Image (cartoon, rainbow, N blue to C red; front, side, top):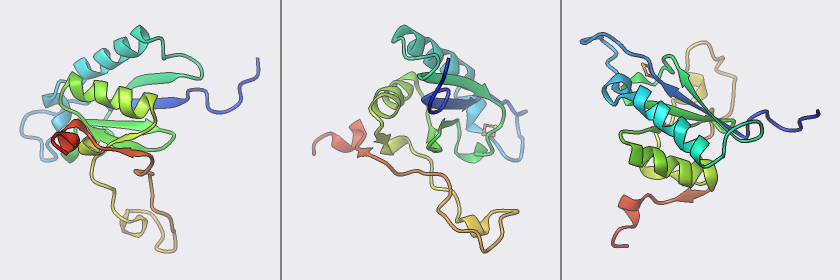
Length: 146
Ligand code: FES
């Protein structure tokens, strides 16, 4: 069998890391019950028959180093970062981004710092870092009444 293109069309990682209470980095991941969110999204992708080779893959991850803006979810190959709170948020990410390839602006994490400001990256490096742009749609909160 020959596979052209990525093994999975879109690969989603959800941080399920838990930190002890009072940890200096804090983390929204455990507080939002990210494990339940991960299990819900996996089941929803299976229900819609969107998983498997060439489809969507939903994986749990350890700390994704976006703790302060978590609960963290990242989609590759684009490197689109979201923070979610509810299964309604996950459904919106699924329908809008994972299925239609558009962004859910209201759930996007803030963009990362410029490449030159990152640890271990030479100042001569260029590029904007992970892609956070793409086809854009407004979330329900932004379209209501407009
Ligand atoms: S603990 Fe979730 S991103 Fe760090």
